[in-house]
Structure formats: structure tokens, C-alpha cells
Image 1 (tube, rainbow, N blue to C red):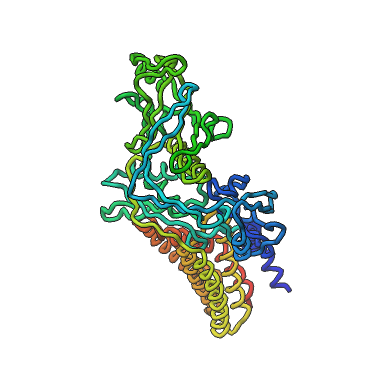
Image 2: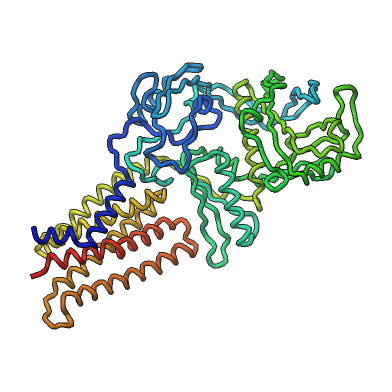
Length: 563
């Protein structure tokens, strides 16, 4: 008991135990968590309309909303959830109970739309200064059919049992590799990454990771976007558009999106949504719905609009009076909307204007979905502005979460087998359990510390980072063996006292540490973006070992091997 008391009262061991307890508190293991976690909510889906929100990327896994029951039947696994969803019928009312609220949803039909290589003319009704005006538009011809009830728009995952975040390789989602068109400067490339990150966050996608790869030996850098729970089409539509927005009157650009011209874009129900004066109405070949939202212009942009309209003539009579030039809205060089300007705005520096638009579909539900999607995309572009350069999609992948689940199970099994093997070898070599057991316990503590830090930093673990963790564990065991060998060496000269031997062992450990750091920094910075998780994990783990676990283990060995 004397040695045990000395070990537990040693300050290095006390620091180790306190940090391990803090790491466990950060990880918060909870193997009894019930239900299934809501990972993503599809926009304009039944779940979204009912009020279920997309989880914020900063929310810890254990704090995320979980589905507990559907129509009174408990849900304890992803398979049970999809079995329940598979029994839904169109227009069925569903009660969904979560850890936060009880929602009532109406199941919408799932419509498959195929765009044909034809165009068709439709007549839509617009409001011009309070007077309904029919306008003819040309749109791609589509063919739609109901293929079954929708899955209410939720992407779910098994209930998390810790606060550790799984990366795309482990939980599934979409990975897109993008390349800027032409050679761009380092400054411009940084602006592209920042703008893209802002655009994706504003759009409402969660669990986003944006990294860069390449850039070595004169190669063009690439951008890797990983989004958990997002569909391939949704991500592709948003990142492939440069999003250059311009509003022109005649040949004059009066304001642009994403710069100082637009000071506010309304996204709340009070000043955005369906146009109350147009709503949804049947048109030839389907339905059309109108939307409207308000934006605020800077005084400079408003003055440009006033100066441009001052010399225009007035057309129409009575209440239906408008200026001779419309306000044309261009997105990526394509005319997306042409709005008549009321005669009372001629020469007026108006800072508050209303943007209107429309969406069409074969059914009213489809038209509503397309309308809100178009409105949200346009609002996002107006807020974030255009990307500095156009991006091309090099590769886009949809990753299944089942692969990651199988990998985690295999990794845990191999870790247990490896730990047992190391324990057997150390016991055979040293023939002293009092030495072999602390090595294994210290390695486990080191893993716990790294995972605790990852949980606090909201850092996602992927295959590369797990590989780095395994390498770091091997390095840690190797360092502890070096310390143990030096401690057990029996030499009687004063220069080779126990304290001197431990110092020599720690010198070897520090030399190996700095060698690892230099190698990992090179891997991190020189064109190995996809392996950043490996480099960061290795650096973090070996640093934790050198600062906390190695000194504590040396103190333990000092006490255990004393004569």
C-alpha cells in the first residue's frame, strides 16, 4: 500500500488522473441513449414544414434532437425508423415525438420529375402596381409522376453514445472535389474557400468541412467539401454556380449581390415567402407560384438607381403606370427575372425594394417546393455574393454510413486484440505484471485524453485521424518501453544512477517527439490535405504523451522498480 499511496500522491500522476477525468466528462459516454438522432432536415419537406430544424453544426452530438416514437410506437434503431416511414401513405397525418417536442406532420407525395429536351410556353400572372398582368414565359418541358409517399425529409442516424463526432467516412454524406477554372492567386483561392464556406452555412447545410489539397510542385490547389447528410444534387447545384448577381436598368448595373450594395436580405415570414397577391394558380401544363422578399439597398446603390431612372419615360395609364426600362436580374449571366418599375420610383432613391419571382411544377406541391427552393437560393447568393472564380466539379461521391459502421466495429475489435497481444508480450519480456500493466493503462489513458480534446474542439474523426491515433499509440508504447528499459538497467556508477537513466530515456523520447512533429507538419502543409486528420491526430497524441502521460509513467516506474 505504501507504493500505491506514493503513486497516487505524485503530482505528475495527479495531473494525469485529473486530465483523464476531464476528458471522460467531455466525451460523456452514454451507452443507454435511446431513439435515433436527426442528422439533417430536407428543406421544404414535411418535417421542415412541421417545424423540425436542421441541427446546428456547433451542437454536440448528445445534445442533438432525437426521435423517440412515431405514432406512439417507440423507435430504437435506424431500421425501425425506416420500417415505420415505409408504411406511410400520401396525406397521412403522423405524430412524431422527439426529445424536444411532439410534431404533427402531413406526408407529402414523392414526385419524380424528368426534364425533357423540349421547351414549352406558360402564362403566369404577375402584379404590376396592384394590377394583375399576364406574362408569357418559356421553361424547359418536364414530365412528372408520383412514385410514392415521401420519407418526410429526415436523415437519421443511430443515437450517439458519446460526444465524439464522426467524419464523413464514418457517418455518410456527400464529398465534392472542386477545381477553380484557370490559375488563381493564393489570395483569390482563400477568398473562394471563405465565400464557399459562408454560402453553405447560410444555405442551412450542417456538418460542413472544407479543406484544400494539392498546391505542391506548382500544381493547382483543389477544394474538398464534405457535408454530412446532404444529397448529391443539393450540393452540386449550390457549389457549381459562381453566383454572380447583378441588377441592371438598361445597360447600367444599379446594384450587385454580396457587396456593400445590399445591406439586408429578409428571410423571415414577415417580409418573405409566397407573394400574397399572386399565391399559387393553375397554368397550362401545371401550377405556378409566386414569391417575394424584401431587400435593403445602400444609399449609394439607391442613388445609382435614382440617377438611372430619372431620364426614363412612363408607359401605361392610370394605376398601371411603369417606366420604359425594366429592372433585369441576372444570375451567372442568365436573365432570371425582369421586373417592371413603378412610375412613382422615377428619380427616387428608394432603399427598400421587393424582389419577386416564381416557380412552376406539374402539381401545386411541386410548384411550392420549386418556388421556395429558388427563393432560398437567390437569397443565399444575395447575402454571400458571387464566388471570385467559377468552380468546376472534379468528382462528387455519395458515401454510405454502413461502411463507416463496419469499420468502427472492426477497429474496436482489432484494438482489443492488439492490447491483449501487447500485454502478453510485455509480461513475457519483463516477467513483472507491475511493469506491463502500467504500460497498457497509460496507453488507454493517452487515447482517452486525445478523444476528450477532440470532443471539446468539436473535431470530427475520420479514417485518416483514426490511423494517426493508432500510430501515436504505437509510438507511446515504444517510448514507455524505452523508459522501462532504462529504469530496469542495473548499473552502479554514479553517472548511471536511476535519475540519470530516466533523464536519458526522456531525452530519447523528446528526440523522437520532435522528429514526429517535423514529419507531420510537412505532411500537413505540403499538398496532403486529405491526410490532415492523420497529421493533426498524430501531433496531438504525441504532444499529450510527452507533456502528460510519459512524465507520469516515468514517476510510476520510479516508484515500482525501487529496491
